[in-house]
Length: 113
Image 1 (cartoon, helix red, strand yellow):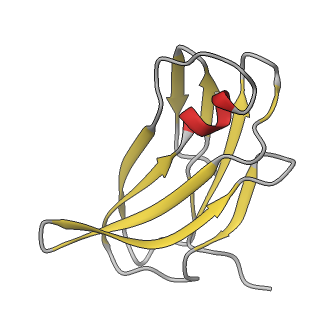
Image 2 (image 1 turned 60 degrees about the vertical axis):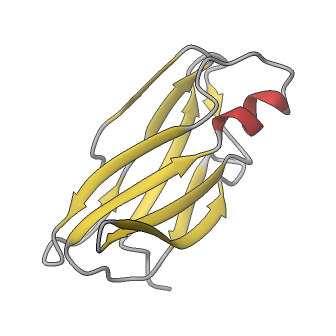
Image 3 (image 1 turned 45 degrees about the horizontal axis):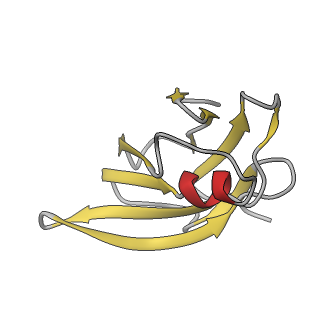
């Protein structure tokens, strides 16, 4: 089974557990407009392994995390109802793993492996 060019993993740092059932969309910047190219939700381990195609052309992309829906399902107030992570893809590079560390009032990210 091939892996998507872009994958993600969401950890709920407030609970210390993977964040399951977080809706995520992948968008490409095309002619100044954002175009959705894939959608999914995190699994019980907080991961999305198949989000979009195996290969993407070089360009600017973004992941949009529906953190409001995630926290609302847990009865938790959040300051960030949505997290948008914008990043550059070089077609020649193998794989982009973009994790999100999430709590109700803060988040951080990095380029994973």
